[in-house]
Length: 598
Image (cartoon, rainbow, N blue to C red; front, side, top):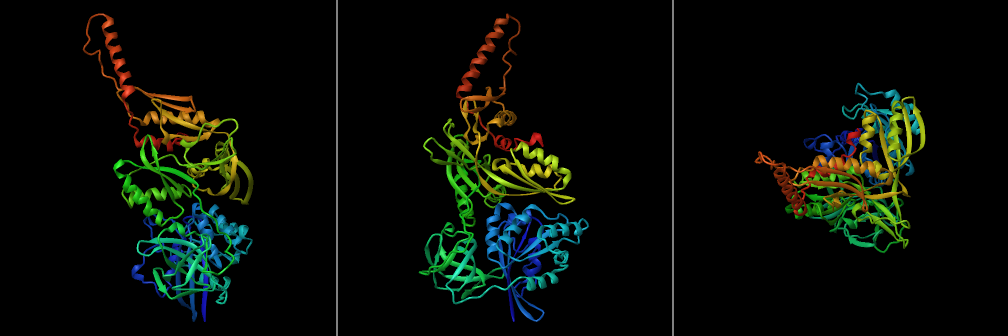
């Protein structure tokens, strides 16, 4: 008898998903132990360096268990909130989910977010406490939190250590007993879900699919329902964990399909595949993934522009959610306006550009997408603060809001509330999960969350708090464009959109930061923060002055005045003709505008 189970592992970031995947892989008949290294499925350099999963990874594990042939189709999902849509599509491809909780940390925010997604898909969930071998593990308290969360019995929770293999046998039994086998129906027309994709230089874009109905064979003509594009299947295969070609995939199978697609943007995560000419109802849950955070990427040296352009194209091949368009800044020259799912996504892309492609970058202040409703009632999306016009009385600007969930020990509630009030947040709910864990729900502007809110939250709570968020809606706000002027020239790369009541404080701190970052010149440098034509803050970088009075000894005071006036006139001419070089530290100081408050 062959037992097949399709399941996913969901957890907060750094709770041990990839380590548990290693233990399952070691069971596989196809796995060569000579290739073993910790976190086998985390293949990207950035994943291994940071110990996080950035892309979902699938593997088929065939092994013998208590006299039966067993096949596990396992999907190891990312834990970070930036990739929540990818997690939702991975869960849609499964029949069950393992909820993995670190016994030293307890239930955290992103665990709950992914759990709710699993429950929305009507998946049975196996609660598992990991890292029980560590001295800091609090099995009893973490178990109570899971019982409170799931409404299960304490006996339903499995205790394991993915690191040393404790409890893995019981977990395998539970997967076989509690998860249903996939339904196999070869008579229905083909219906398959795309849950991920990647790009190969020789085979083009590759779709990772779960087949729900019918079967797909090499040579079939298939249709992608979101675009109605038709392709011919040139290769099918499974992951063991390396790609292995097969002749066909049937309902219940998870694998990949190659159709010689040259552009990865033609593949949409969550899309449904069927045979050409067949009319089927698309699988639920598909949506267009749109960037939420934008930043300008510019090469430190203008000679690296073409190199940066080629590097962005290569990154785009394996990351359809990442977008970029060419833009020109008066201060920084030619570069690209890049769109990301969130701040972690941006950090990963920036790090890959600097390490894998050896490019020195200047990144501008990250910003979110605003909506402007002009006098003609036209809706305009603003992804670059420099493009925001001066808003008149008859125009309205809307900013994205998030629903933010925070879990914290009760000792830090006061500090968190103060932080959220500073960031224009509104409290919606507070609930005590246990005596040592409190759940807080807020509605907050996205611009206030993405900047450094998570770092501040971790600092205030000594690392004990966890956070998750999801997009809520656009709300009207009183916002203005804050410009930075260097010697009356607007520096578009330093423009930002801020609440009107915060503009003075932000402008004052920013001009002071830039004053310390910009090197002294032969002439006076004026740094101003302005809203439209109104200057609200100003700092002066004093010039480097030559001592022209050194040669003036004796004589009347008018001789000294004459020399000083002559020097003053020279400084004026320099200021008119001179160009201020703005170092990279100036842009970094704009990013660290709140560090004095920390």
